[in-house]
Amino acid sequence: MLTSLSIKNYALIDNLQVDFNDGFSIITGETGAGKSILLGGLSLILGKRADLSSLKVNTQKCIIEAVFNISNYNLKALFEAEDLDYEKQTIIRREILPSGKSRAFINDTPVTLNSLQVLGARLIDIHSQHQTLQLTSNDFQFQIIDALANNDELLLSYISELKAYKKLQKELEELVDFQAEAIKEHDYNSFLLNELVEANLIEGAQQTLEEEYETLNNIEGIKEKLSESYHLLNDEQIGLITTLTSLKNKLQSLVGFSTKYEDLFNRVNSSLIDLDDVFSEVDVLQENLEANPNRLEEVDAKLKTLHNLMQKHVASDVSELIQIKNELEDKVAITENLDETIQAKQSKIDAKAKQLRVISKKIHKNRNEVIPQLKKQLETILDSLGMPNAQFNIEVTYSNVFFVNGQDDLSFLFSANKGGSFNDLKKAASGGELSRIMLAIKSVLSNYIQLPTIMFDEIDTGVSGEISNKMCDIMLQMSKTMQVFSITHLPQIAAKGHSHFKVYKEDINEVTQTNLVKLNHDERIVEIAQMLGGVEMSSSAIAHAKELLN
Image 1 (cartoon, rainbow, N blue to C red):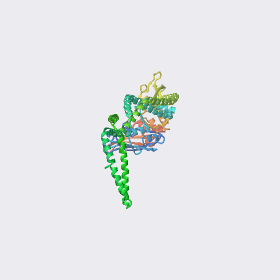
Image 2: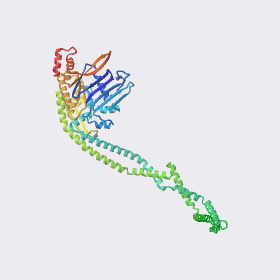
Image 3: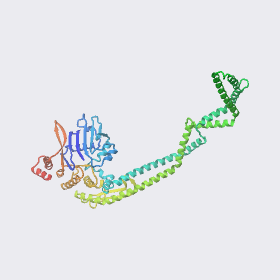
Image 4: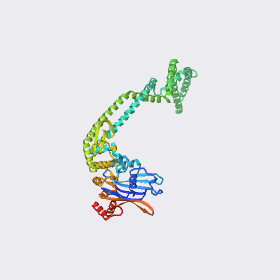
């Protein structure tokens, strides 16, 4: 409920601060006194867009602040979804700066207008005779039926399953689209993959092949150098091994004289052993080396294949080619297995659809069961509001379509006159009739769900005294479970409020200002008497006012 409202520098309001009670509150005031200004300021709290024309003094900022007690509204989940701190006493503040910029805060946390609108819709419902579009909305009509049917938990379960169902459907669509594209590329990818498979790619193969190519391509020169090396090592006259053997023998004869000579001998002997190994390896290489034009041609072809593949795939080495081959294998495999994947996804969708149908049939059954009760309650209330021939024809028809709130098509038809044909509400009811229908619906709903604070803006316009009394009785009944405001010009309604506020204008220092004040009992007598007989109150008007209040 709205517990207090503060408005500074807005339109004709200089500085307004007022506290509100629960129950049924009345707001009265002469035409043009500023009731619309008050509603305009309240609308800014609910997320309405603002502009500089809202500022009373355009060099100062406008601040509108409202405090709500939300302990009974089950709004914790909404606060978590909007990433806001939940407080039982929640403060909403709106600022309009002289620059034209606007800022909004919920419990001192900056928020967007969208967040303000989401929360505001759960806190205050401002209704006037000309704001009945909600009543003709299919979604709102379903909300009425579902409130009576106690479908809350079923609808939450349905919405959760529907979200999963749509996610699966989207994934299936993406798979089918991917398959269509993949089929186009499949043959080409398969061709590329086969090329890489046939190349028999092995890590390090390029370096090995290049070394083999260089050897085979320069075999005569290598042979010549190996032969020269063989003779340099093993010539009987000047060969390195012969000379080093002679040096070893000479040093061996000196070993007994000093360890220095022994060290020299050991070093020469070690070199001779190494040289013998080198000689043996040169001998083997020389024997195994032979020209092989066919192998040279084969190696050359393999190297050319590797170079062509690297150029084709923009790869720097064989490792990158192997990686590309692996990726192509995955693509080809995915394409070849897509039919199975799509079939599995479709099976999941079918299973989820089955779950949705189970829930939606329960929702449908519950709705059908409460429709007669809803019709009876609405028609009874409208009868008391001067519409004795009002009739509703409400039907829910089960369909194959998964809507956001089940699988039902809703027909919510109305006839205001006996023997008249049923039609859509917006075609069958006048503005005044729609207001009374809305009042009846809100009255019924207040018995089943926790409604936000509701503010009826001159909903009683154009109705007789007796009907206005009935409307007031309904609002009084509603105020037992929620906070109700009524902006009215009718003294009969004004007298029945638990609290009474007056909107008025006054000139201060030749500047017109709008204000709102709570009236005490004596002030209420004066206000109601003036509503009955004008500014010049007669004794009979005062007596009538006292009678109404009592």
